[in-house]
Image (cartoon, rainbow, N blue to C red; front, top):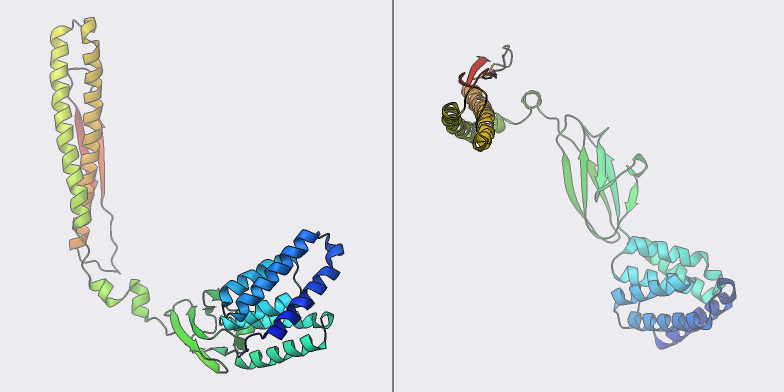
Length: 331
């Protein structure tokens, strides 16, 4: 574990950062105000780091890095990541700082190398192996697909719990939770059990096959059908009464002006009764078919005929011709 910064290291880091930032300022086109702000942010971030406020220090160092990402900034970001348990990210930050450590000096390089060596030993590894039934399985680690190059090799991960899942055709899904500890390598074999053939044929388990189907849906559909038939009867009655009223008031096809709206009502009642009748018959027929097939024990090897219901309405040719319909069906 890293020890907190002492005052000597604090001022040394601040001085090195300021010197490197100032030396590269002309190439970046940074003005004096930006340099002053970056120095102040770096000082504040280092103070937060000394106080052990790793989350706030990490955010502050990242803001400094947006102005200029120096080796010192990368190093301090890695320190905060390590303290927060993000060991893999911290190792990457240390290695980036090490790549440019010669720009700062030998002391800085030695400190970074020491942290890299210690951290590599701490990071836990997970080794995922393909077991029985998992040769072609799609494997995921923490929701991310694992490529073949990561199978059978040590994968560095942060300490703590990690989820491994796998899927393959005609195999039961694999799920496992692995808790990794520092300095340990944990093996995990992915094994996928074969789904029994009887379950593949039925598309589910025995419990699902034995569960009786719900009768709620047929009754709901039947209720809608009955309501539609009642509505059709009401509209048909209004149609007949309106037709009789027009026959008494009109001579042939000539009607008083005051009865023109009643003729529009007649058309509405006529077509409305036809539509509701069709809906009602179709809904009642569908509900009956559903109940019929729910009660019937099906034989998978037998040929089954689907039920069909068809409503054939007959349009009135004259006002004296009543509405009619015929129901045709096969079961």
